[in-house]
Image 1 (spheres, rainbow, N blue to C red):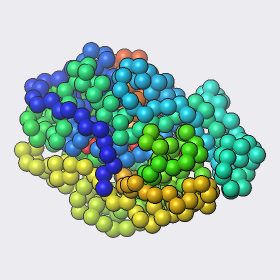
Image 2 (image 1 turned 180 degrees about the vertical axis):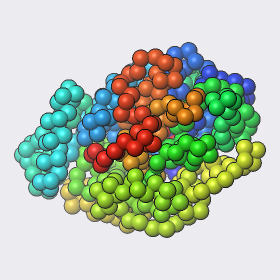
Image 3 (image 1 turned 120 degrees about the vertical axis):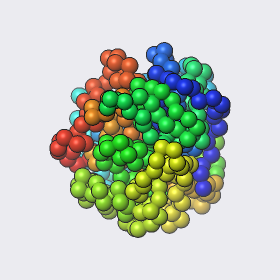
Length: 442
Ligand SMILES: Cc1cc2nc3c(=O)[nH]c(=O)nc-3n(C[C@H](O)[C@H](O)[C@H](O)COP(=O)(O)OP(=O)(O)OC[C@H]3O[C@@H](n4cnc5c(N)ncnc54)[C@H](O)[C@@H]3O)c2cc1C
């Protein structure tokens, strides 16, 4: 069942042309549309379902720099600044609060990894505090587990996934972006090897710049145009509790379970690292690139054959631009929550925090997390198809880093100095034989 998401008004009329067409109304697409409009460009934002309807409203709501892959850290740090600016610029509630995030553990291996990361992150002027067992205990009053230590990142924050994506899209609309929901992009029109338009189910828009920010669907969209984009998805489960005692105002990560305080006084609960991978044709196509990631993460993953072998973003599909496309057949990806994981989350919460034992579940949902092999996004032009840009593959980080990712995509499209070094996010690393290595921390 889909979690709630704030409705956004659609524009009736599809423009005949636009400086930039953005495909996908999640965090990546909405933030890019907003940043492009601030630069004075005309933008049409296409969404096959509802703005924010997929990952952007299904995530935990952590806006964090802590434990980000160091290649991604500058983007995460800029993003926290932009989250703060949104409060003034959008004048609408995104739920963003700089409440800090706390990680605590009973496992020596976690602590060693966190200490090493914190040390290296200092080079980027990121100052988290490693906690002793006593300090971890003092920051989590009421918890009964014997924490051996933890880490505290006071400059991190949280936001409300049901509100933030729509708030940014509405902000973009106020700057002149036209928003088209229930409007799938079926494919690109090209002339002389360059992008010259986008065919949608409601007509064609002429443009010389297209940003594909289609989340889990990006690889399928690119495949139609001969652009190889290794992407894989993990189904994860989260749930919201009814109002509960305030043990933290921000996000708290404990072994097996994480909580994030919600504006409504409950928690969004997540099960770190656990999820289901469904075998699919796309998965087989890119299996070699993803092998190191799966080896590292397989402890928490289950593997299955399901419907995604035959339908959805990872199936092999062919479609013509004047017929119904796979994007229209599934307006919103809405995977079911796994009840066993909901039970596990409730059990662990009660074990760690007696005050949180017996919490009532308000709603549980599933979400498909799209990843790249090195678990950092692609935010880049595609050299083999001039006019096509990508902002996708956020690998479970795109809500928090979305605002700066949107700005970076807009900088690249406009030819402006980029907000951060775009090199780590270049598309070419996916196809030029670069050793992508193992992903960093998630
Ligand atoms: C359970 C869960 C927990 C997470 N927790 C966090 C967290 O705490 N912090 C964090 O930073 N990140 C988190 N993430 C990741 C984060 O939610 C995503 O990285 C981010 O939302 C990705 O944004 P996106 O715009 O790329 O994709 P999406 O939000 O999935 O948006 C893509 C949109 O494109 C549309 N689309 C696709 N193809 C087409 C087409 N052809 N035409 C028109 N529209 C199209 C889709 O309908 C969709 O709405 C989590 C994700 C999940 C699932």
